[in-house]
Image 1 (cartoon, rainbow over the protein chains, first blue to last red):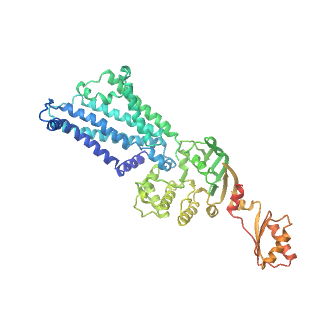
Image 2: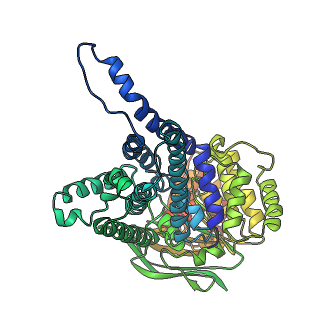
Image 3: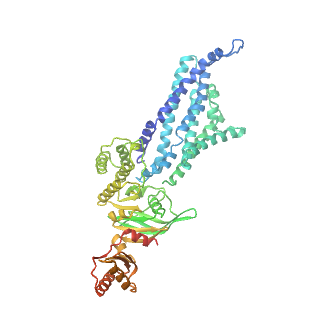
Length: 255
Length: 305
């Protein structure tokens, strides 16, 4: 695709010079560091803070606690920060009219759409696995007895869930022209997933499993039917979001 | 050969009709002025020609190929300069030109030479500042440089001078004059002196329709009336002339302002002969007698009446 590489380089310069990559680097590094540290030292901190007359029994932390913190921080901090940082991926271009010059130079609209998605995907991949590597290193340091069995499945599920949200963000950015609409779409999608989880039949197929069963998967090591169904639905949804977004973007009025 | 052919173009936004059956063509090698009031539909026409907006009806061909909404193939022949060009503020002018060259499919070596040549032409060759620090005039000059990077067959300029100060306007017009040696230019504006300065042919758009089209000379010649002026030595002479011609059907809208008599006639040449005959009959020797050349402003006002 002509101009794909040039547009990707432009996106990288933009995200670097506007400090987006810097912010994400900090957030993901903090998540990577904080997860094993908080698992290791939180019990000690708690026991120091509580009155001497109160006795609480805390079991010794393990590598599982470290990964539990990682999944929780990744869901509540890193993924939220990522979606926030990239929520204006197209709206700013619509607002300023900067895409007009690109399109009137003959750059295919689909090239723009997929170049932007590629940059988000590569950024997510880089920052996610960087954060994972930091947590992995410190987890081994603090909890040498820990194993990596089941780690790929449980962390990989969360990684895929992130891609699903990125695909939805990209698609909604093609449909709506404001910064907030893609954010609301992603938020609304999560809310719907939580509501649908109330129905056991739907829960078995819900992509939400990829972000909620990570600790359990760490111990299981093998995917069950429900998880396979969830993976299948998530992959389909990623494709669906990308395709409808690209169809919409191809016909979107730009001026 | 026509480089741009617009046929029966119509467009409405909700209940508001912006373009009604607009038809015109632009011949290769000309500077075509597209004039009209604010909101007349000039930008809408150009945006449809660029494939950025969907027409309700009609078709546009650029270099013989039909413009398809959402497709960018015909844009390979086009350079576009909007009224307020917006660029990526985090890039420098050279970086932006490199991006433009690469997406236009120009080889790197050729692009480097071309970029330098164009930046020299618009006076931005030594500028290392990021675009976010540029003035409006600098952005407009960069706009024309990026529009020419792919050696377009057709340069579409949408009110390129409307936001500029007089010096910026002069600079841009002189660049457009240079450009017209190689590229066909379509130039929308409501600044009529700019049209007279650079355009070979003009179309006037009013209420979504083309109401007049032709060369500047043809449009001026086609005016319904021509103005004239007689400067007498004394006010009394002016008054006598006014009385004498007031019953003559060849003259209308005649006014007296001191010793100066102004008026209009449907046929300027005939009016001059009759005026001289009246002056001769009254034994008045004028200080000056003049047939005034029509301005584009008069052409425009008459066209949109």
